[in-house]
Length: 283
Picture 1 (cartoon, helix red, strand yellow):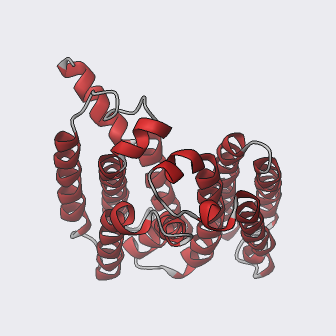
Picture 2: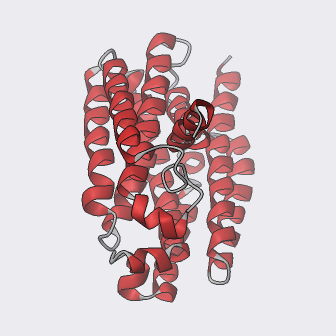
């Protein structure tokens, strides 16, 4: 492999789209908490720390998953030979160290959340991924906690709690659907994921129930008058996209988990619009 191919492989390990998405979730958490203009340096540090930590977590996940990926994802950087396993591990360590260094500049609650998340990222693939439901729940917590991290970075975690719960439930749904998609490779590697433990259809039924809870809870910010009608007008289509995704999952889990991701992004946009509308009304 050439140097350019190796660099490309290292970037692939980070999953740039996921890094940007997670960083944006942290920014949204800070934005919903109302601290973006008050403490912009802290917001920037939180966004950077999130991106570095997610990149590190993705890289170390590929390191531990390299044998499974030879079956499920043979075109990823390690299976195709663009990056050696040792280089992937070293790269993830560098990213983790950088994430810690940046996170230490933030308030103590944000540092505590970052510390828990870094341990969880490292432990996920090695200890929790193959346990039915537990690995999924850990990933769901990590995604949802990006909102908490953003709020904690600006010293106001309360407004981000609803975001955390809704994002965690939607992510847990998506993770279960992804396990159904990857069931062949996971079974080959002896993992005991939820679809393997209870069956694909029952796992999808669990995923559907979780998403229904999230959808039913999504109007809470409007009902509590935290956000106005603008929030509701965006979150309702987001709910519809996600509900259609879980229905699709029974026939095509690959298409379903991709559609669910778009619905989650639209739901995050609802919070941005809801917060922005509140700010305008205050002015």
